[in-house]
Length: 429
Ligand code: CMC
Image (cartoon, rainbow, N blue to C red; front, side, top):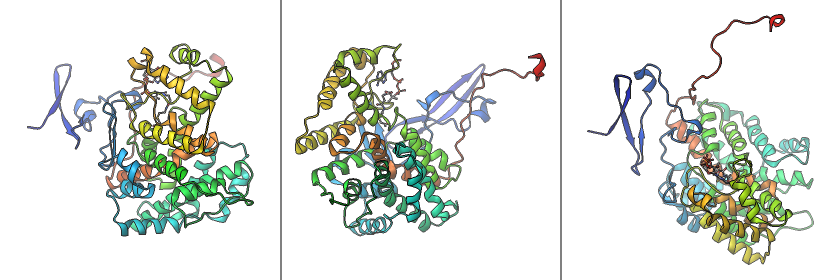
């Protein structure tokens, strides 16, 4: 007999089925809980114990520090694959053959241009606008140029075209967001370059000088994009799935994901890490003082880039990034005082009982910002880089949600407000 869970409510016992995943993870299936118990729901703020879906895309074991996309370890993928290969894997479910990859790349390369009219949108934004605000708006506005994406009953070919357009155009939109912020002319894509190289060229070329892509930098960026490509049901991915569950189009769903990613507790942490390190430096570099602030419950300061909702041992992405970070800094011969503070802070936190007892370790964002900074990416663009990496994951999860024919996402609540009362006329209040 398959396993069940027993729920005792007063005199009654309810049996709940237990669902087991392919890695032996177990979940109590409460799909019929309200109906069978006469209205009970579960209460789980922050969804810390809620499996919102089954998914065959990413496996993560936070205790053991395991992360796999479609069964392949993040270590192997970061070492051997290209970002577009990983994007194909996430979205289509299998590694592409040479022919499939060639076709996929060809399609991406033929959609890297964005409509000229979109350039006018940039001019309307103040040049100090945060790039995540600009990117989210532009991604959403892509649906106005491709209205067929709004049809929920579109063919597989149409869905693929929408997906390819989005993957192809995001680096162009991202680089142009930066160019607009410095009021420089935009650089058009060069489809002879690889995905990461093309982005770097659009970011850093100026009319007077074509940017020469350094292979060490392009390879580090390729790794960073792969490491960020999916992370199962995190805040932004859950947002994409829930927005998509209303049958909103892909551009709108991903734009919502970009907004969710922006927050400093999620993707915005990479920007927050560098800002924190700069603040510590400006304050005289006393890491002990800042560590004490992070531990003080009366102080809202948290050590940015430390801790994770699911990794309670180490973040496997951080291990890979730390190595890539050393390689880039070494190659570029960078001696950055911010890095010294980061290293001091990391060592002090790793040896501190507060962080040890709570299993707080450096996460992916602790190091990614240091690489971006070394490459010359401005701090406010860091979360945009994360968004570029996360895009295939958002798309794969959106597509899976539709293929699973999931119902519209709509959590319940337990109401704690006032009971019914009569309206009081304003003169008597
Ligand atoms: N600095 C100081 N204390 C911390 C930190 C931190 N960075 N993170 C967690 N804690 C403490 C927290 O105060 C709590 O202490 P206590 O048990 O005494 O109340 C305990 O550790 C557990 O924390 P939590 O807030 O219940 O954990 P959570 O799973 O809700 O939050 C987190 C996870 C990532 C939001 C949190 O660790 C955090 O705010 N970290 C800093 C922001 C950051 O680096 N975010 C990027 C995450 S990785 C990129 C991504 O995938 O989004």
